[in-house]
Amino acid sequence: MDGIDIGLRRCGSGTPGCRWGRRGFGGRGAGQGETSRAGRMLAQGDLKLIALALIAEQPRHGYDIIKVIEEKTAGWYAPSPGVVYPTLTYLEEMGHVVAQPEGAKKLYVITDDGRDQLAGNRALADAVFERLATFGEMMRQQASNGAGAEGGDLPPLLRAALDNLREVAIRQIARDADNEAELVAILARAAGELRRV
Image (cartoon, rainbow, N blue to C red; front, side, top):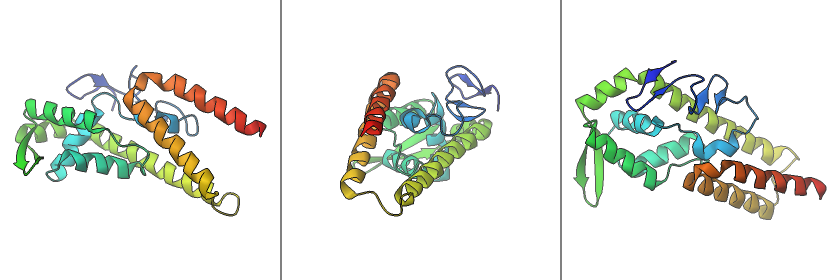
């Protein structure tokens, strides 16, 4: 997979700026911060490629693409409409998809040029889908381990507080990926406070 040209930039195992590397998400080993990177698990160009692959499976609306990615990550990551719809517009301008009006929505259908682009980058598309599926499975396992680790579910108020924290963190990183370090520091301080209780 090294040096696969995705039509936007070159991205390969160990390439600076690429969020997938030899050891998984962000080039880190398991348990070293993958969940804090949920909002940044798609490297530049990944969304264009997976949107194209999903549209190749069947014509889709932008919302469908958001939902498929959210399902693959067990609800931990969903690209915002503000990212997905410009991506679809880009694919349309490149001639990789065409938009067909369907009421108030647009249904995106892949073109022959889009199929050629996808065929040339199938290995990368498969790697991105595998990364999303692996992340989703890891999140499902963590959720099930956390629920039963102490012999029962967390109290409802604690579960709600943790869910709220997760949702806010995901929204913040999706809104501004450059504030990752600040968010991690805030969460680390919170964890430190909890240890002192």
